[in-house]
Image (cartoon, rainbow, N blue to C red; front, top):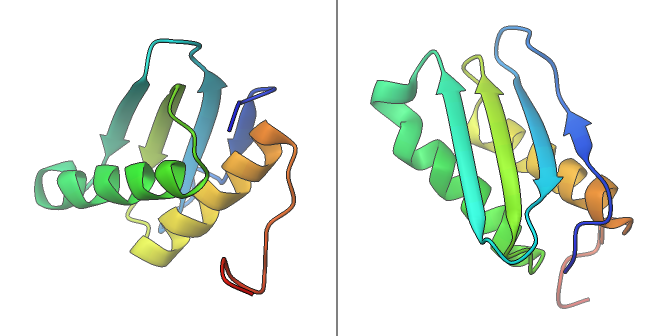
Length: 98
């Protein structure tokens, strides 16, 4: 799926994550992470971000994530919102196979 416009979601409040999603035509994925828990959970955060991008079929994007200790489900929800906003699609609340 192609990113049509830049999207910013989330906040810089404690236990949240702010994500900027930008187009990166033909250059693959670039994920930049700033996190208060990067040493402990940086790989897991990047894995969640990558998984959501793959589920949307996004292969060329710049992701700038500023994490303040968000749980996995918060990261996933913020990424889904960013992907929907950036691609102009609506989220499928019923799941992929319904």
